[in-house]
Image 1 (cartoon, rainbow, N blue to C red):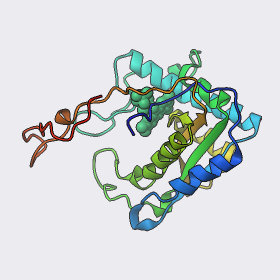
Image 2 (spheres, helix red, strand yellow):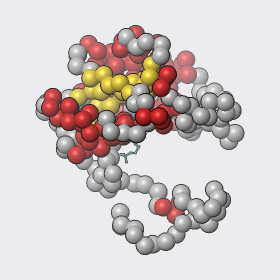
Image 3 (cartoon, rainbow, N blue to C red):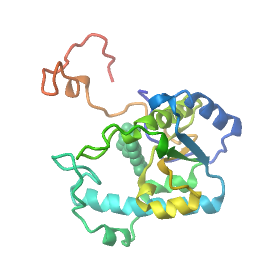
Image 4 (cartoon, rainbow, N blue to C red):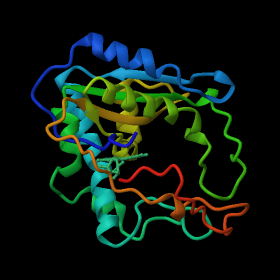
Length: 227
Ligand SMILES: Cc1cc2nc3c(=O)[nH]c(=O)nc-3n(C[C@H](O)[C@H](O)[C@H](O)COP(=O)(O)O)c2cc1C
């Protein structure tokens, strides 16, 4: 977990199919609500599909970058927890040519996985809330994270990406997704050019409190491992 940094640049070296099998073999032990295991993985092999996925992802990437450059957290809730629309014109952002940047790895990665969720299996307990849903993905992302951990265990690396989900109609058509399913993640994987070993993360005292959200910070030093 401490070295599972995002990697977007890969060696030009194929990944044997048995390694991919082993990744799924470990990842499938993820928990899910009611143990319904509503994940499905598509291994994207055809060069045409990879190019299409890169093009589709770049649409979301453009929207994402436009919001970042305007100082917003892209597609994030406001202070009330609800989505109030983007502060930038997303239509304009989509048609603005921008460097391929973070999506380049989608086309170049030796392995490209799309993790799809069967929406009928998810118990979305915050479905009636006014805030944006957090529970929706909770039965799928443990599996997605397991895929990344299992890949790390094989000497591979990659990154969880979601840009493609901004162009859902195109994505659905490309993958022949039924209406009951939606994409949770697009994951490029491969042998890393560089593997980060020192990740920048908040310290425990910044996010753990006692008794209440605004309780005193958990500040014991016992058991801590230096970064
Ligand atoms: C839910 C989720 C969505 C993400 N989406 C993207 C993405 O679309 N493109 C991308 O390049 N990285 C994406 N990331 C990777 C994050 O940028 C990365 O986890 C974070 O910046 C920490 O970087 P590090 O792992 O290199 O320390 C995503 C990560 C998560 C958990």
